[in-house]
Length: 122
Length: 122
DNA sequence: CCTCTGTCTTGATGTGTATCGAATCAGAGG
DNA sequence: CCTCTGATTCGATACACATCAAGACAGAGG
View 1 (tube, chains in turn orange, cyan, yellow, brown):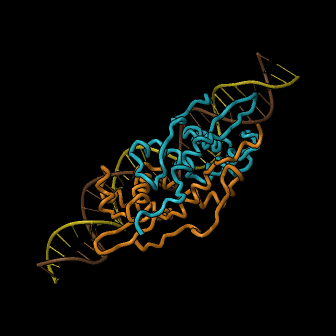
View 2 (cartoon, protein in one colour; view 1 turned 45 degrees about the vertical axis):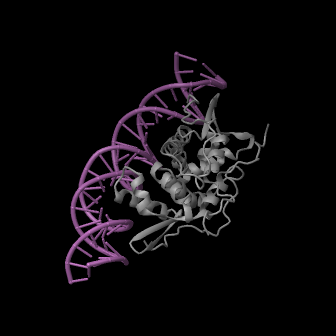
View 3 (tube, helix red, strand yellow; view 1 turned 30 degrees about the horizontal axis):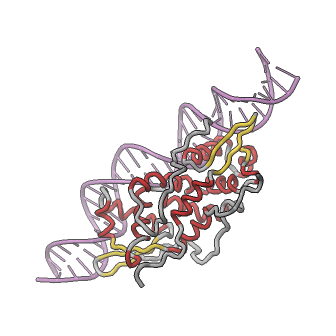
């Protein structure tokens, strides 16, 4: 559990939109794992369930029954999200609670944002 | 080439932020491949190079030399981006040009956006 | 201390993927 | 028609990954 996987410079301002400047090799290497973690339907749903949870957190016991998958498999996916820096876990008594790291989501959204950046030609 | 891989309802309004509502299984299945495609450092850089290109498009011949990878490998990654619906390709004479599908990027950014959505508790 | 429940770890297995070299295809220009 | 260059496809290989069953671990409550 440890709650300290954190492969992210969560503080780092990190990156103008990918549409504005070429992302560097380092930036790409740092951020790709997060997209990769979201690149599985199960994990994308888990991420959403966690991020949209009332109170900002969810018990694993509430996540698992939502899928036709075994406990270990869900646990594995949660670990992947943790290692990608997208969520934090905390044990309280028998149960483990997950919460989203919104700064990280915001970074990723910012990187993909297109907004009013027009094609420089046309 | 065909330029018509399009696994995307590019038109679909598609999805309030993942932080607001749980994404459905279908939505997750539809969008996860795009994140997966971005989940590789090489493809993330390619995506950025394409999306930030002057004139809105880049020649493969300008992309390949930027990496320490063979042509076939770059071609493979570009195909992955195409099949994920993130880019379009067009052949003109000897060269092939790629351009970003900004609506799709905007969708993905919207899904991850956190904005001013506060934790519903606290 | 024992047991029960919830969660994670381990080990095994089948599938997917990143990469390359070789071969192929698509135009351009003799 | 031949050849040259740019790009993709094919085949092979090595590695990563999703999944499960079985086992281990962590608290709670006898």
